[in-house]
Image (cartoon, rainbow, N blue to C red):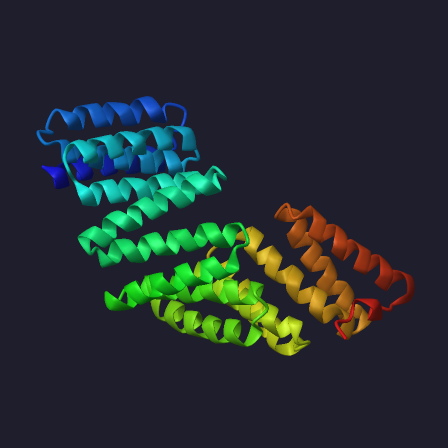
Length: 308
């Protein structure tokens, strides 16, 4: 019955999501939930239904309703002595709190989930919880705590051979190392993440990995390697149809290359990157490129923009 309920609810959510019927989504989803409840005889199924509903609210950015649904999921799990469901509810509440910029509530919920999953020896749950805990610390600039949390998540993901989780851990640890000023460690972790994400075909994660590694090269004035990575990220951004990401890569690339290019090539590249930034709504970046174009037109000299 539990599996059937989740199938009914998730299928209904998919229809609503793909159909674009956002104006009536709370009422429509509630009707799907009410219909599914007629077949529910055990409380744990109720928890799963609220979980599906909460995920939908979170997906469309209605975090207040998402929180309400996850609290009902938590109550249902508690009444059924469903420790696994309770841990999942705390993790979901932590996710919502993070999106609502409530650091203390996010930390508290993730720690509650960790306590429960430790009791159940739920390795997959612990990997997820520690990864999310690291996200909070990273968001608020607590890099040592983030590094510790991501490392614990990595240990658990390695135990269950969760390749996608391992790739995410390497990616996040690379970002933390970069923020802590450990460029060598960040580069090594980025390369490990790239290896995993290439195998997974995870383009969005690869874009982030290439950018992180490029930042290391920029810090060490290695223009050619940084540009090569931005070009890879730009190509992937184009392939997945993400206009904003593509523009960001074009911007980063041309800022590095234009000061070293011929006047004609610099003019062309800067104009093209500026066009992409305007189209993507990246106005500040477009304005910066405009300054470079004006300087180039005035005296043909972009030496002030060189890294060295």
